[in-house]
Length: 111
Image (cartoon, rainbow, N blue to C red; front, side, top):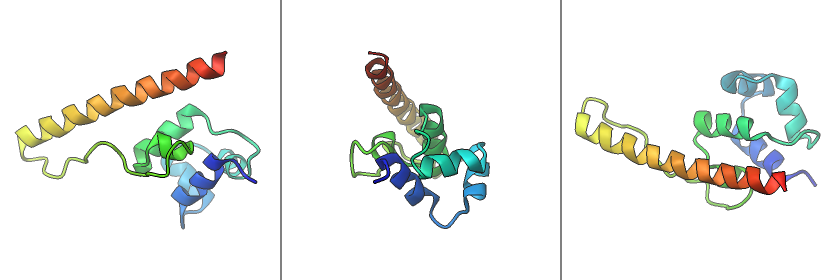
C-alpha cells in the first residue's frame, strides 16, 4: 500500500498531469511521480508548496486528519482595507501554528 501522502498527492493533483502539477509548484515531474509511487517521501518543502498552491492543510496531506479544510480565509474583497488586514492577520496566526507543527515534525525526525 502506498503511503498516505502519496494517496493524498494523487487526490490533490486530480485531473492535472504530473507535468502540469509539478510546474505549478515549481518541481519536476520525476519528483511527483516518485512521491506518488512511494519511491520518495514527500519533503516538508514540497508539502508547503502544495499547501500554498492548492489550499490543503498539512495535517491532511500527511494523514494526521481527514479534515481537508484550511484554517485561513482567502481575501475576498481586496478593496475593503479593514477586512483585508483582519484576514491577513488571521492567516499570519495560522502560519505560526503551521511553523510550530513543522518544527515538531523536525524535532521528532531528528531523534
